[in-house]
Amino acid sequence: MRVLIVDDHPVARRGLRMVVSEAFPDAECADASDADAALALAASVRPGLVLLDMHMPGEIPAPVLCGRLRECLPGAAIVIVTAFDSSAEIRACLLAGADGCLLKDTSETDMAQALRSAVGGGPTIDSRVAFKLARDMLGEQATAAAIPHLSGRERDVLQLLAEGRSNRAIAERLDLSEATVKGHVSRLLDKLNASSRLEAVVRASDAGLI
Image 1 (cartoon, helix red, strand yellow):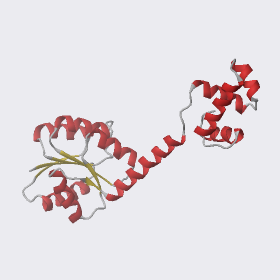
Image 2 (image 1 turned 90 degrees about the vertical axis):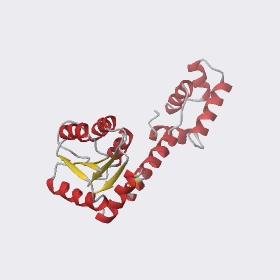
Image 3 (image 1 turned 45 degrees about the horizontal axis):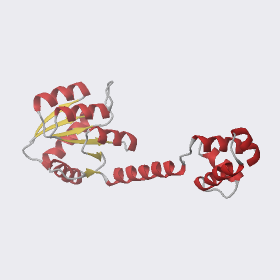
Image 4 (image 1 turned 180 degrees about the vertical axis):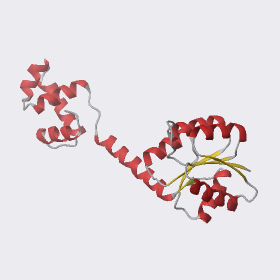
């Protein structure tokens, strides 16, 4: 079992070596302190497990490094091991090819078990990270759901509503019948979950639609 540990802090690398030795007593470890060294060692050592700190010095961001390591090591388990739990960066790394993420304050026993799971193809995401990823994803979905899709004509009508114009004035301005304008206004109230024209304008403004 070959393992590549990528971290710019010597103390962190030593600590991870201890965890690896507990998880895999016969493992051979190689260390890298920057992204360039990591890529070179990945190509020469061909490790089956990579432990990667998410915040490395240099110009190669962690997601890009994950992607390059994945290209070089298609069958390896790549696990982010970080002291930070920025869900945006972690998600970018996962999308780029990382198989999981562990926080550095995880106990040695739990981390060793997680690494064995990673090598076996099992889930390897700290529960705190998983919770934050799920919470942020739900928040994004809620935000997207809160901003309705409006047609071009509905946006025209909405803009004129915001100017305080009546259905007749809107019809004249847009060369539509009053009945057609009334239909657009009704759909706008429905899409914006509003009970009045004023509430529709306020909700649209909050959503950045006008």
